[in-house]
Image (cartoon, rainbow, N blue to C red; front, side, top):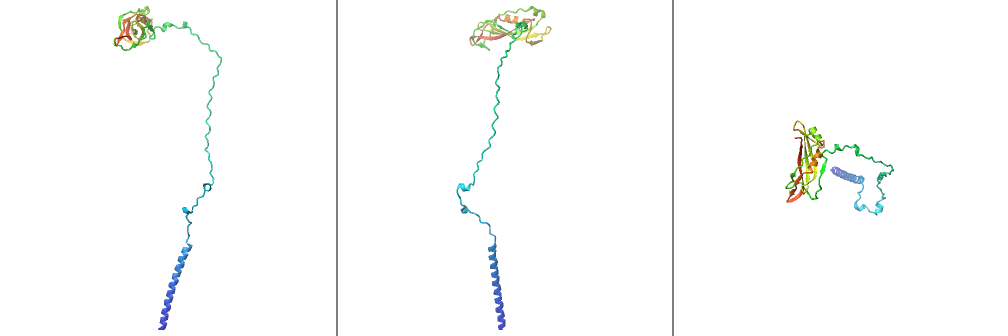
Length: 227
């Protein structure tokens, strides 16, 4: 019986020893883990940063300069004209080589009468000029022989006295001899326009009136030849 009790007590002591040994081993393992576990670098906080003077922070300031663009090209010099002493002889034009008759019978011919006063010219008067005397032109013999059939429209500038101050050719109609067909031309020849203007300057009119006032004004009339 005593031997049995010894055995029981011995087994209990052995069990306790194993438990205590296991606890010790576990503690050692835990201690070794915390001891040899890798620790990361410490993070510097705001309090850890020590500010120094600006001269210590900025090691070296490098001064940079902007590259300048090349200067613009110089302005081209304007050549200075050099006067020369060359004499240019003017060509003298003589009127002997010009046939004036070629230019004297066209619409560009203007007949001038007596110069009137300098009052205004009414372009559209209330009462236009009215004819009080007509002078028929003398038809040149050359035009008669050629059988000219034409109409010439004359523009009159009538002054305040009813006289023709200016007469111009406005239109020339040259008709076919055998029909009533016509064409508008610039000249008719045979001295016909000169004869027309010579007669037109002798016409007399009752002057125009505008707002009860006698004024200068224009009027037009046809001269017929060969009808």
